[in-house]
Amino acid sequence: MWSLVVAGISLAVIVWGLLARSRFRSLPFWAVMAFASFIVVAGGLVPVDGLGQAVDIDVILFLIGMFSIVSLAESSGLLDAVAYWFLARVGSVWRLFIVLSIVFGLLAAVTVNDAVAVLGTVMVGSIARVAGLGLEPFLFMLAFSVTIGSVATPIGNPQNVLIAVQSGMKAPLLSFLRVLLLPSLINLLVVPLVLLKWFKISDKKLELLVIPGEAIRNRRDAMIAAIGLTSVVALLLANDALSIAGLPHVENIGFIPFIVAAATYIFVSDPRGILEKVNWGTIVFFIAMFITMKGVWSSGLLQPLVAVLMDKKLYGLEGIAAISVESLALSQLLSNVPFTQFFIQYMKTIGYTPSDVWAWLVLACSSTIAGNLTLLGAASNIIIMEVAEERYSKSLGFIEFAKLGTIVTAINMAIYLPFLYLAVYL
Image 1 (cartoon, rainbow, N blue to C red):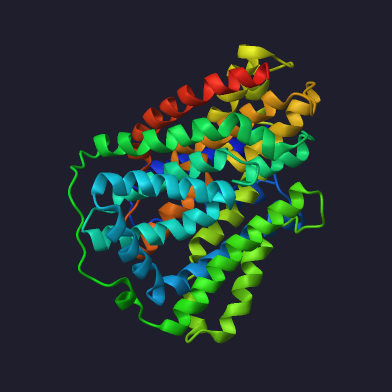
Image 2 (cartoon, one colour):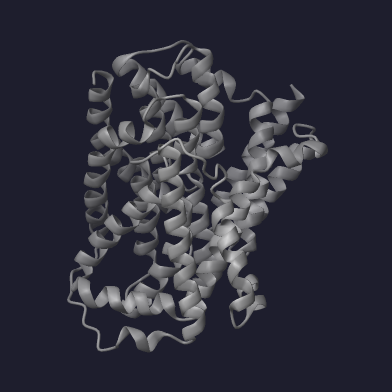
């Protein structure tokens, strides 16, 4: 009983923190999550000696590496140059939104959505400033597009990686692409249209008289940043190819950006300045989140909720509906990566096997799209929110995200569900 009370209090603190942000602007969300982690540790849900096992060091190193490289790209002027080059070619505001949605979505599909969230937030900041447009619509577009794009492949986000590996399904890349690629592309085209309507953005021609190269402030740092970003993407893709081929590869992909960043510090003009620009609040958030969610799940608070909708193996429409609802709802409480980690084991215990490919694809799709429902549904949302707050004093409001996210999520699932239903019989 005590463990249930502690878990309930920690979740209440998190929800309160999200809702109170509109009134207490000086209260960062990472501080709220840190306090929630203190509650689960003080309440005995996670022993102090077990904190090392609760925290995923892979994710932490991944974020430190990506933040370092992106900070260098920003301070050197590389991202401004990319923004000028990009805007000079899209021609209009509406086309800009559609093209960015597709670009960020495809990048998330072939790398990792959290990496695109880090890079994309700073990039859209530059694009919005250069184009003379408000930042908020771009932040929403980025959040939705990296989530949608990452659905399409088993390497697009951490939960898909978990599903591809722990489910035991054969040929995960082909299975994902066959069922989820086309609806993801459709969603990447539809969502920017929804945003243009929601924010009442009128179309206008974009004309720039600036040469992109003039935006570069430090050529050496810009070159190092370009090499670093290119190396991270290339190494992630090469590592995925080795994994698909069954050859030796790096299992902890978060180490890759960190090692690349580690190779650059000594060559840049201001190493201390780069490290100071790492968003340490986001790092603290993730450490605290891992601890908090470990405690909440170990308390047993959520297991009865799981069993209510799905106490046995289900098939067809019933199975699709149950897995989708479980994923969309509980990912808001646990965030989608911790939820997926625990739910995979639950699905195995009630009889799902590697041959039930459709069920694993439903889990991958719905647990990922849960990130479009509320801010807490995906870690990438928190990354975007924290980076935007620190660099631009802009934020994604919890209530507004939920209002718009409900519409976007409904549209997303309406497009995905027919394809998932067909997957049952493929």
